[in-house]
Image (cartoon, rainbow, N blue to C red; front, side, top):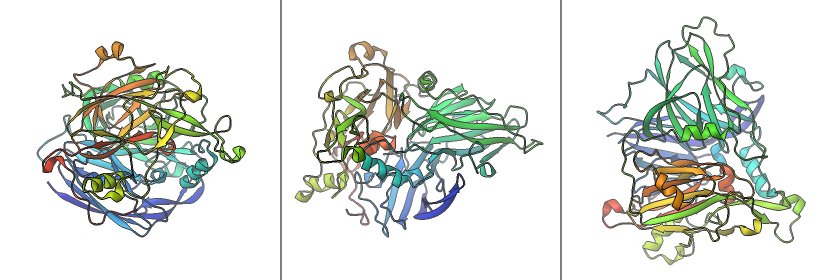
Length: 549
Ligand code: C2O
């Protein structure tokens, strides 16, 4: 195994999109940021130097971080932020994962522009479970605001309403031909007739599930979230923010130019969203007319939940997998929005711009997650374990195993039934315990698809469905043979998903909705996985350069 070193300088960089130049935050002046390519089994050492005016952290989305929680990155969860002028070095080893992951800032809305691909090749001496593709191309789907994204979220925080929607989607940082002032920079992916290409598609958009298709070309799905899947062929894939999908594309069409395109899968009804389409061009090298206008693929309608579900429920592990049975923990978490009453003394027309003079909030089991500010959760946990009393009131361990009241989660209920409480609550898991979590969407304000991401783990998605989860009815339908394994599950709109994992990675691990506006509103919780006994079952001591709050 090898060790790779990288320097990431977080800095302000002028970037022109949609006819206007903005000073955006980048890594090394690149947007999207640098692609890291590594082999499974290798170690990555990345020194992050913060030359920007904002606090920053970098998260290695989907990397298991076995016992190396200090390198995970969510701010105030596993580390305090890197202050302007500061630096921090992330060190971790990639174990047992192959395929496509990515990295992104995990601080406010910085990940709108601070993100890049993390590609994990098979380890030395092993190969892909499919014929080696001739070319490999990361396809990062993003979202662009014709504004400073930090201003956009800060404004929403102030008003209590929903943040402005984005102005474009992007493929590898470029909106593409269908937007103003953009066609000269549309991304072109060259292919050769008859050759198979691997596209590593990553949804790095801030707030939007996306459909992705290529005109006249089928895609063979071979992996998601850096784990192989049983191959199947489709003309459309759907990715929630955080998710990745590896597809093989055979250039088997008449030489020419074909659009690949992404646009919204929007499950919430009557909510404003960015209804534009981003494109890049698949261009055969033997094409004579390099100016010919490409044809567009047929993408599903924005509200085509059937198309989204058909894709996600087609995913399988390649063979029988070791799904935990004999559960130690059987948890039930609601995921959804809520509305908070306008705080007394506030001017409702200015600061309570959610429906009926309220403020938007979001919760799991009616707890709206608040980040600590004096210690990261992991540091507080570590110091408590070593008897430092000063870290004692950073969090509580009373995150509920079930919601406070049962009701029709998919029905339109009065909001008095669920107005969340704020808290920094974690749920404690014994080392090695076998855990099931039912993730149940609610319809307090609206129902929508929530991409729920768990740090530090991959989990089995044993079932998903619409309506209210019913253990009696649904348990017999669980796939305990070959369910897909992921780090982010798209919980269906007005429905539920059931995940399982073994708590074999000690530390503090955030679970949250990967729509950033929802994490801003509190749709998150954290698992505290206790140490076992023995070196390989405990976390390492914090690195000397760990930023302090
Ligand atoms: Cu990709 Cu907590 O995030």
